[in-house]
Image (cartoon, rainbow, N blue to C red):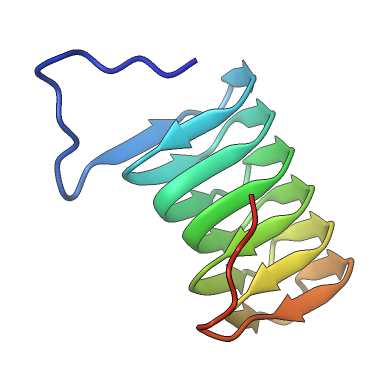
Length: 123
């Protein structure tokens, strides 16, 4: 469920954080940057940059412009820009990205699909 107040408009540079020890069961949709340090059981649609912190966990699909994964993702990751898998990341699921960087010791199990700028990301 998405709630937006009548006078509320998203501002550039808006950042959202889900803290360690917090669990959300359901989908998250955000127009600004989002940092996940907690747990999400659902999908995340981020119209900016998504960062999954070292303690972050998502059981669901990710759609974002750019993403940096330090924690755990079980599900598909789709980015229209860059995807970075840091050394502490564990990803189980398929990846669709225009650019991909995988650091040593990152764990990835799935299929990687490299997109061109003409490719559309399907949600």
